[in-house]
Length: 141
Image (cartoon, rainbow, N blue to C red):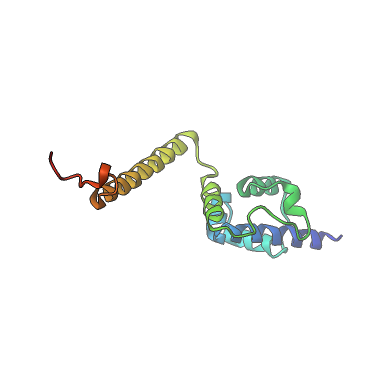
């Protein structure tokens, strides 16, 4: 296999996985701290990837480096399950945050989840679905 063929295989796999995660070239470049043009060259097989960058890309995409180097490999989320795609995108975007930033994001997400639960419970109370014996919650006994 030639050097060009290897670059092409790696680039195609990176592109396929980036797209499967619904991540733009610009977003991916920002996460990797490189230019979008650099990503484009890699994905087109016109630029080689150093072992360091290959390792970084594999960590960000949560794939082993050998998966990125396999010809026509079946990669992790290629089935395009919408929930898996969104979770993978979130996971990819979290790469590079420090511990304090991640703690803040977790607190923020917990708050969103709690707000959603309160809204769902509030809606159930309004509909009378959460009351015993089908009685309305506004009635006094």
